[in-house]
Length: 311
Ligand SMILES: NC(=O)c1ccc[n+]([C@@H]2O[C@H](COP(=O)([O-])OP(=O)(O)OC[C@H]3O[C@@H](n4cnc5c(N)ncnc54)[C@H](O)[C@@H]3O)[C@@H](O)[C@H]2O)c1
Image 1: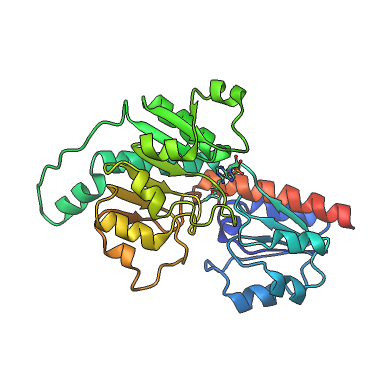
Image 2 (image 1 turned 90 degrees about the horizontal axis):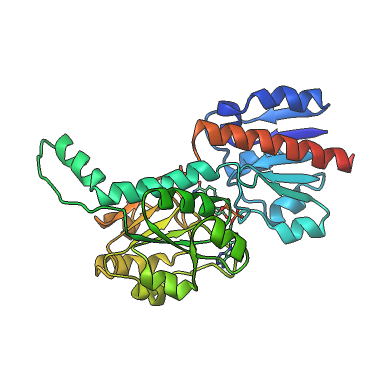
């Protein structure tokens, strides 16, 4: 059986796994081009694959129908919104993900955004590079309120770090926040509206699903403090970007730090990128050597087990 691995992180940080896959009796092809596969390339390279480890490539009905030999799809990461999980199930295709493999890195990114905003780091460094010496006044993080939406692997790590910085931590998760977790992580469990109203920082750590699409729209942005910062390291589409543009332009909220956008890379005329209080990184929250190694190790084990069961 053949396994194809498309994410570049495998070649960069997880190559120990090539031997493990081959020793387990599989043929292996992985992406060592340094570039993401274009759609046609992805279709073609995986044409005879029994299992694929994918990044952000779209695994929809069309892809699944075009690859009838496929038995297992494993996400090199945790968000499976690019995979038609229901259709895979219907076709008997195993779907896996590397739960928790990159949670430390993503949590650190969310916290970095808070630190950057509070000390005006981006403006100050850009200012000195431009020969300026303007002394902006920031604010302290200790004592501020962070609202964490989604209390899974990443949300929990953000909670721990924020608590360590002296922040008050609110959490919202209708599926995973039990009294034991509330106590262990020293958070206050609140409803989503209360989280929006009380937080100085709102940090999103939920999956993109039909339920969470546009979860934060104008109504929700208006509930936030005018000094609040919105952080999205989860997925584009959870925040309605037209509403966000208006809210940032009109100072309904202070600023937004995003690692993700509904269209990646952004269109050349993306309005959000014209705003001085919108900060975007190119979907790098999980890109640390450690996270990519963890992810490659976990994805390897998951796909080997899944395909052995199908043999
Ligand atoms: N930017 C990046 O590079 C990057 C990397 C990893 C993950 N992510 C995104 O972050 C998300 C969270 O990752 P994780 O590892 O913590 O996943 P996880 O599955 O461990 O946790 C997700 C949590 O969200 C909760 N949830 C689901 N629907 C919700 C809703 N409507 N309201 C509130 N909570 C809800 C779930 O109960 C769960 O506890 C992923 O789904 C992924 O899309 C982004």
